[in-house]
Length: 446
Image (tube, rainbow, N blue to C red; front, side):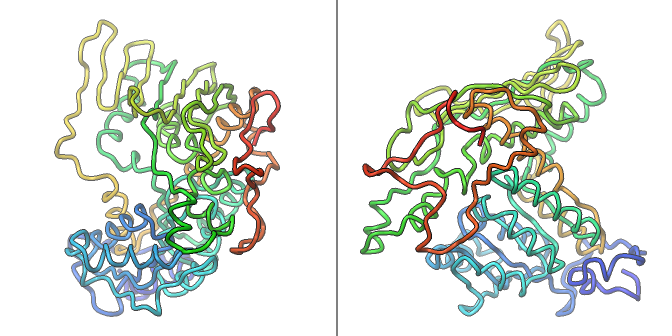
């Protein structure tokens, strides 16, 4: 770090510290240890669920001069549970001394994120993705370095907002890492590099899957029992956020984005067209909201190449979370494996000792910050991966072929303009407590 710019200037100053003053020296994280009060990196957490708690711990483990100083969530009990898990329980004992979040630095409600951003140098954004465009824009406007989880939006207007904010982040030279962690996973980095080097020739077809038994369900009954009163509809949907599109985007967006992103990465581009099918077979209860439990999408890329996409949440069925690719000179049947045209092994990655990619993404981010480097601009790819998944959802919901421009320019806005506990969310239950489910052939391409 040169004399004209301290590490404190870099993490707090964004553009003012960096533009016109490219860092002259590069101090690796291994040499950083602890730099004193002026070099403390203040970390704020917005979104205190399981992923947020894990990301905060990984940020603290990434560099010894990090301190968690503020936390926010819509619900106060989520903040307290997250804090307890990190500061008091075994999960965070290795970094407990780095957790400095007194009660007055724990902010609940819809506006808590603003207070966290004010207190922080680096902001971790891990709320349900419907809020990501708003929170990302506020963090960039405040000049903060950012880690944010995927997906980055739940609708096309949100993606466009993310892309506009990304331009501001790039102009201010703010590091932004997006939690598409396969890009930080050794087995994928080595595998994709070889595929791009042409080991199996021209890649013609990809196969990407997220087939599993599904995720948690938070029922209205259990939370009304805890509260001792009926929940407002906004409270209920926020608690059970995975099952409402304005918050989650459906599981093709929230989870399967990882595999779709790998398809884009290997194909070195984004899909031109998508068509597919989907629906609800297993998850049909009131607490399953409006989302599908299965999607099948065929994505078309330049040159007529295809990526075939499956995601489903069916219990007691074959699970498969993977990617594979077929080329003119061989196949890559799964991550880390490459076979020649006769089935002979060309490459096999042994990943038993590879570092945890969830940790690596934070290690590399905080190493760059500590070195005063502007290195990470993950936002555009994260936004386009999000749009690819939204494009797939639009195809399955509508039953129509959807182009990239159709998806990018869609005016279908899922996220409400007003956030309040007594406000009605965009989708409401009928008299029997069920939510409208998109029906192909009649539904809009939302």
